[in-house]
Amino acid sequence: MARAVVVLAAVAILGGCVTPVTGAGTYRAKALSSVQAAISETETTRITLQGVERGRIFGPTADVIVTGNETALGSIAATLGSVQPPAGNDRIRDETSQLLSDAEDAVAAARIAVRRSDAAGIRDALTEVQKVTKQLERAEQALVSGPS
Amino acid sequence: MKKLFAVALGVLTAIGGFVDIGDLVTNAVVGSRFGMSLAWVVVVGVLGICVFAEMSGRVAAVSGRATFDLVRERLGPRVGLANLFASMAVTLLTFTAEIGGVALALELATSVNELLWVPVAGVAIWLVLWRVRFSEVENIFGLMGLALIVFAVAVWQLGPDWGDLWAQASSPKPPAEENWGTYSYYAVALFGAAMTPYEVFFFSSGGVEEHWKTDDLATMRSNVFVGFPLGGMLSLAIAASTTLVLLPVGVQVDTLGQVALPVAVALGKIGLAVALLGFFAATFGAACETGLSVGYSLAQYFGWQWGKFVRPRQAARFHLVLLLSTILGIAVLLTTVDPIKVTEYSVVFSAVALPLTYFPILVVANDPDYMGEHVNGRLANGLGTVYLVLVLVASMAAIPLMLVTKAGQ
Image (cartoon, rainbow over all chains, first blue to last red; front, side):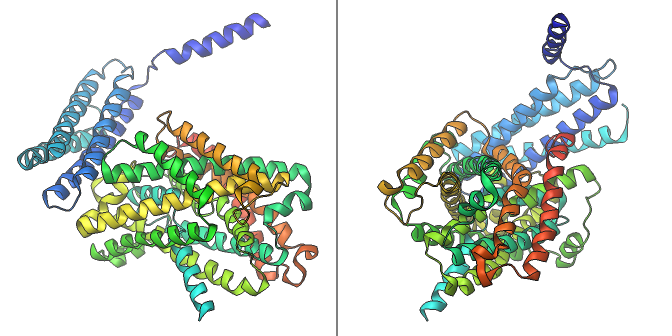
């Protein structure tokens, strides 16, 4: 009895250490929710940058918001990266990871420009953020519409 | 004239003090995900808090004792202890969330990291609890909290399609991209945010702090039945602002900065400054209320001297609880836990604890030994019973919905 309890406990503990292997549908759903969460962050950055450009948001407030977006994007990428993709889903993984990385880079550039109060940098970052948001929206559509 | 001033001040502070970090975050999240389709929950929740706040205020005015001072005496130590544990645990969690909210508001204004603001905010709150008079705490932060009216101004300035907002509000179902599970989860969270237990602890104990008598019942009722619904309108304005600016572009609120964005878009820097002031006042005022509520509930259960109407030396154990609660709140936040997540969990656990808070109020308000001729009438009992059923349903559904929806994901 005691041995069975120990075995069950070991299985439960070790089970928590193994990265879950998911089905293709589940993996696609995880990728989709990651992309949607990333759009939420890049769109927040866009609204903030436009506010800074038009003199409608204080620098410190914009800094806090954009830094939060950058941190959140890092967390979204790390969460998806830790999921074991099922066979045949490497393309989804590679494309989504690349997009999330691009989004993080664009928002990092925005954060740098905002902290420096660099008007030209903010304009460039805004263009980059809008571009990556469009790519994320296309990826969202592709993930919604079915298998690649 | 003096009476009229007291009524006006009471109503204004009730409006300004209605919104706390739970209302700010939950309404903004709901607006950005579900539009105005959950507005009905705010209406139901505000009516519920009005019903029970009036009862607990009446108990305080008639008996001269706070509601929970009577719970142990009337319902026995076991029910009193269950009530104490559930309500105090949730109020402590809410207190922690409010301290975090103050730190986040200061971070947004200065860009200094919130973790550096947490101890500063905690010490400032404790100093106010220790040194500042009860009426001053209530009036100053209640009036400053009126700054949140800026959200209503922002909604008007954004020039919405009012017909569309009304269509959303009058269509209580999830939008196409959401499901009934998350919709129900956020309905429970919104209900918990509107009916947070500490509000009745504070209202009832505050009545004793301010020496309410039966002559004050009309003033108390005007605060509740005018001030609270107008405060609820601020909650709806916050939801409407995120519905208009964030929902169409797929932004889901997960930071306090995102809550402020619609105001900046609509009104620029002046509006943003007023919103940040409102965030600070709402969270600081609510931190004082929740901190005091923790002390009230514990001291009233054990029969210690409590309150700010006596010197700290005379209520040493009550003030010790305030100090320890503040230290605990600061310590929890310094583990780097996200204050917004703490807030989201606090409103859901509030929903779980609701029956243990509101059932004893209904019992005490029905006891003629305490209430005499001011015992509950048919209307109060009818509404109280309906709401007791509602809080039971919300309480039982909260944890299963949290597990099924992975906390609303």
